[in-house]
Length: 193
Image (cartoon, rainbow, N blue to C red; front, top):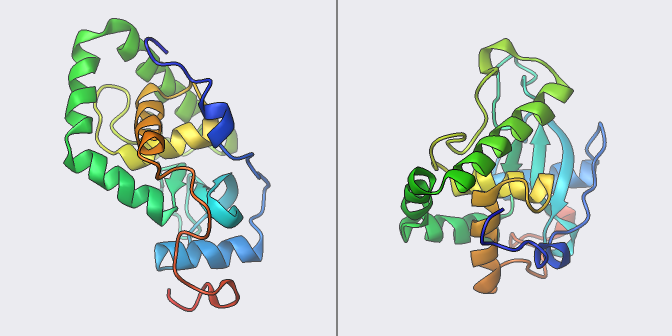
């Protein structure tokens, strides 16, 4: 990535926990975070405070047959709130403008799109979403939440827009955080959904 080092991320990106099944505790925590039963959850590639899910990897086709292009879904409420703040402050517009003026940055973002598509395709082919990734890739910046979820799941240096947004919430002291990201007792994590 041009003009933006990623060594700092090695210290803040939690080790992923990935499996073909998601543990019941993680499903309960996802329900508490999302306020609904998670659909198509297949892995937890990144975690936030107290080992709660930060990103859920989702099957490209949901159990009801619906195509679901958002392979990496951000579930951490604290991080979601911080990214909403960045969006309202205009970071998406700034990064979208940079895509039009910085060829290398645009090429890295296009490569992130291909990375996203390849990871999802490795899980399953869904023709209806063949060329769709998330967050506006490869030419727009539409959703920092999706792009940061990709950065956390794929690791530093894969998604330049996600990495920049993650660096900013880290600079502001929001990420990583300690403690759970929802105000529920872990024994009753699903009670609020």
